[in-house]
Image (cartoon, rainbow, N blue to C red; front, side):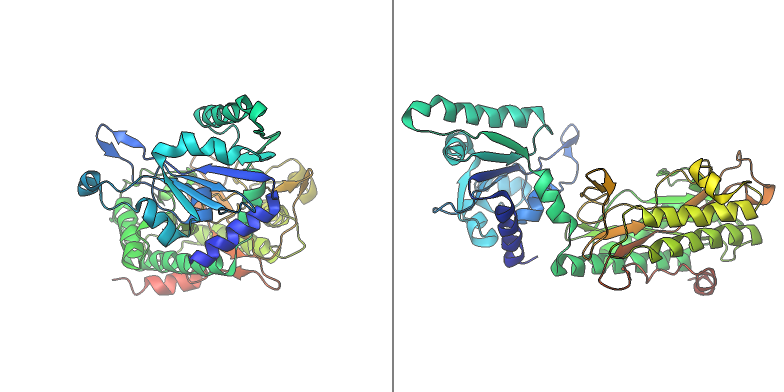
Length: 436
């Protein structure tokens, strides 16, 4: 992202909160995995969205209309000794030069400078209630301001959770964000296609997991958006199966739910295909039913429709299909009301997608499902999970299918960002004939 893109975001937020307000937002910290080993650092999405600043333990302040500068960063100073071990730091100078901060301070000055910034603001926006230590530290600064009331200092009157404003802003993707998400989806789609060509009986689930990450990294997306699911056979009936350690068997399907993260933005794609390259009649029947449900859901992903309409469309198709297969019986309307699909389809049909794989943004407003609007990105991912213990005809037992795409709401037809990953059963079988 360019500096102008981050500046645009900060200005939009400043306009939303008003000139008498102040935003305080901490960066993420490194997390210990075990003893001297840390998990790979990943910046807080909110902090990254507003600044692009990649280092841990920083603090961001936005002070609308402040004459000395609206964007202030507190960060680690340069430290040659630590940089010898851990790599270069941006330091105070880098925060200004490379990230457009109007003012930057070392972290050691946080407790001195922050009360001065808070003084005079009426509304204070920060992640209220997300971290008791954060609440305590900010309230400590506020108490310092109140203690100086006789000298004219003015403490905030209102404390507002920053998510109420910032997450609504993040829900609508800018052209720059959409461009990155297209690239992320394309990289992941190409990796899924590669797995179809590679797959054969006897390979281990772990091999496909490793190949997916390798393909994404080689295309420029080093990190994944979430732990990959590579589920052969009945493992696909475990929604969050991540062991990925079993051999793939001839005659089974394999469900792969995997997506890369590119420049801080997630992709999220699921494809299900036959390990040996050919759907059995029962597999094709269930797969085609799920595909029809997904197509019906995507058709509802349009401006003016409400959030739940794609889910409702998918459920209706699945229930009708389950009745035709003799798995359910009764009238469609009654079965929908009774949620008769839940034993076989227990999750919803999608979620917001963006910097987080389950991205921010309210699904309801004033108690009602919100209306879909251009710039929103969501997943559409119906499925059917018929375990060996399910009360279904024998040919369908042990079959788990999910088909998931990343969908951008536009002024016209929805744009399927992940369309490069084949999902038509004939297209999958054709591709798998050329396995290498």
